[in-house]
Length: 347
Image 1 (tube, one colour):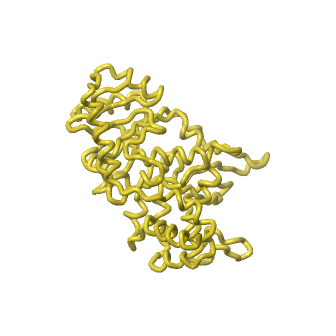
Image 2 (image 1 turned 90 degrees about the vertical axis):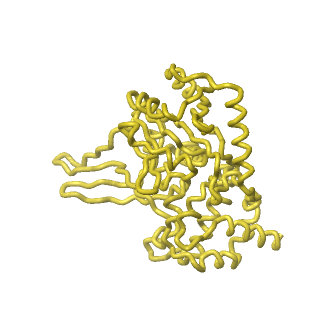
Image 3 (image 1 turned 120 degrees about the vertical axis):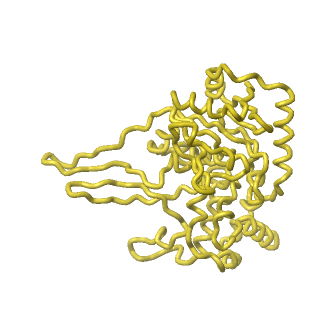
């Protein structure tokens, strides 16, 4: 099912969706794009988003919050009483999510719920979620999704995809949920063959705009490079701020802390980072990753070696946020090129 949505009627569509769903959409804060829950279409700003800028904070925050109460407990006369937070069973729509971020959801699905253990806090938020994606017609120079198995117009994991074709959007249902939702919007007109051809043309143009790197080779070379001195080169200018992991849509490391209250406490899950020295500090005082070299190696190995071995996927979606946000201009693509170069010499 493919429809046409005039740009001047986006607000009308959003206001209709808000009546039946919790809608999360792009909002502007200064020159940043943030995906936030909205109560009116007037809060949405697609003008900056349409250019090509991605959200500053990845949408993983929606399903893996920066801080999350797992349970609270109080001391009573009869003993300790546990209280779990209410289940978030609202019907949610994420409007305007990018293909790279959708892929990050699919990767986290595998990690949090696709194996023996099921993380109910994660799966409860993923449940009843509809993803309406915005295809990227003009990727940034920092984007490299096509190098890690993605595409600026990818539809995997989406329910509905929007493609910007001049003064309107091509709206295409991708899943059964998307078809059902579009069926409720009776005023949308059917797309013509010319609209579909234009979308295909834009998809090819966007793909051609990105230089594709043979990053799949990294899963072979990194095993042999574990103890290579090459890792030192990547941390010479790193300041250890960890922003690369906090803005990454696939980084999911967390810590669990207990916060006491007057008569009980709360157990809270918070974002953590493998780039921080305390992340692997043992109770004995031993730290298996004492320096930046080991921590940088862990970040790259996790995404390009451990993930492919355990989940058959590269743990990076090529969104480029780490490249954009690094205060000292580290570029993970340059590190990967060097690893492949050194790995080829060692082979």
